Image (cartoon, rainbow, N blue to C red; front, side):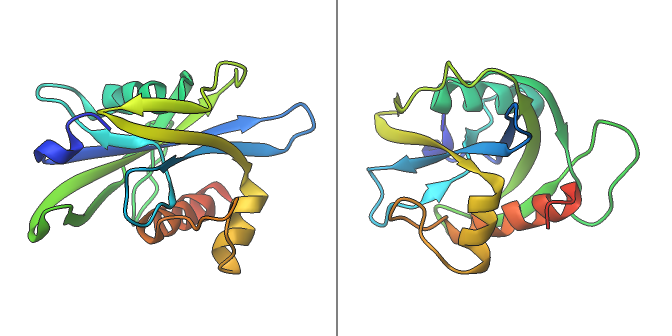
Length: 171
């Protein structure tokens, strides 16, 4: 979550997908112990000055989970473009109030090795717990308002996941 609290104008979220040998698809979500109402969220954070959001996505995924993305693409909110490289830009309120807005890039990445996942990480002095959940668990949680390991998915991130899952054909 590098620089996210310092007021960056751009941020990234990385929906990293892993397919098991049995064909089940998983994704990592992170939980911060520092927040007033801890909830699961998509790994991500601020785009550093001069950094391309594409590379920020890989960096943030690694910093928060220890995972390395092999393939990454963006999806667009309203229209899917042809080819592997898509862009999804979402305007949302920043952490400083409704007058400050930032661009949010959502990347969908493929990961091949989950053995390197870190169960806990420290990012910008924030302790994060990392868990792999099956896409089916996440969909069930979002559609039926159920908790995952006692915590809900952050509402804004649940909306982004729903949109991405629709675009990917999971919903």
